Image (cartoon, rainbow, N blue to C red; front, side, top):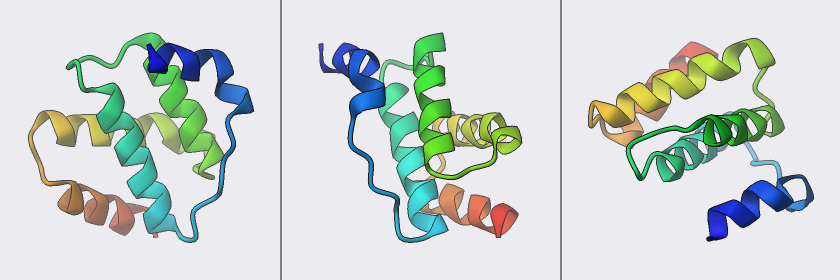
Length: 92
């Protein structure tokens, strides 16, 4: 399974920093969305989201809140753009 490979090789995957904060939020949103495909965010998946958020430059104290807000928005069926816009207003 490809996700298992990501967990095993996570520290060796190449990473390019997005050009702006909106792109960082979009990438974090996409990561959470993919890991929620089965309807659950398991501990290892949450850990991967945290690492992703930190690599994207989000401060450690804000990471769990961002992931939680994205997860709640996805669960509630909110459109990605409105969620990203709302997070942008809080961050900038």
